[in-house]
Length: 107
Image (spheres, rainbow, N blue to C red):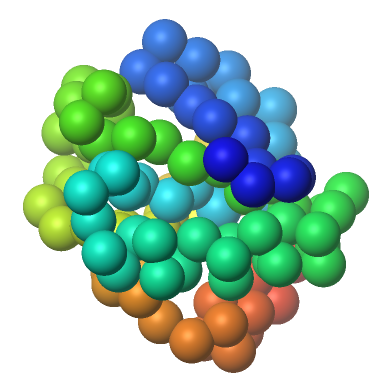
């Protein structure tokens, strides 16, 4: 897991997201090619928005309960939470500019 990225699990998801203010959660899996493609972008965003955005990753193979709760059907799915509530979503590996625009909209 990259620098500045917070791993979350079924057990600590609610605590991590509620405490995070604005949180971008990457629902991913080891075997997912597009998930590997987007990982360096998420690391860059975690550094760029340090102190204003928490970037978290949840492995859907190991944490099926949370993935099911949010209706995750394809990965990577990125959900943006503000004060613990989902406010935006991106599905698939998208360019960094798309994610920055979504983040800026909610900051």
